[in-house]
Length: 242
Ligand code: F6R
Image (tube, rainbow, N blue to C red):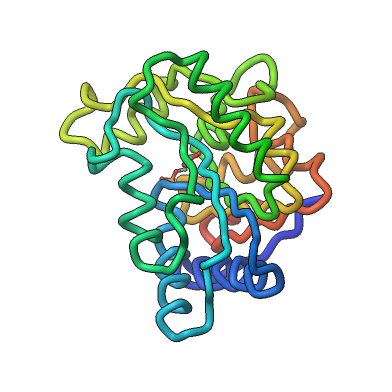
């Protein structure tokens, strides 16, 4: 069952979602957060930084695991997800960065890196709240449409649609990495609670498909309907086809 919180726009989506994460870390100081990158959560991270600056939030005992990372990008590359997390959240709050984890994009040994990251996730004792965005094609993390649901962290070849969608962040489409490491669907579904965000018209068709179409690996996000505790915070545009 997916609980839906409808907001009028991106700003309200960001504030409402931030309130949910704020409640999580207030109620459980040593929460394990599963974190996401992309355009969608930028406003949410801004709200969390504001909450921290006001003295309302304490991240000192929070640990985090991110969903994914591009293969081949260094931590200094401004499009790496490592860079994104520091830039948007970690460097602005009192989180212990030794306890923030992402796949290591510079490790080109895909099999080794994926099993290492799977162990990292397993060692956290379960993710309390997993934050997700959704790709235009229904991907969560970088679990692209496929004919099965991948269970654990794996290396994926990004689809042309994802490469095109992400080209806006790079100088040219040719510079978008072709491979990424991502948590698997099984690891995502193991989180105790899932918070998925969607904003804007471009997401409306896939949100409709996720909520009303058949649950199938060709629409990876549809599997969330089989999770016990999922909250979708979405703005009017993203919900406009329902
Ligand atoms: C990011 C991630 C992706 C994005 C998705 C939506 O860590 O795992 O699944 O959530 O591609 O991206 P935006 O928010 O840029 O539309």
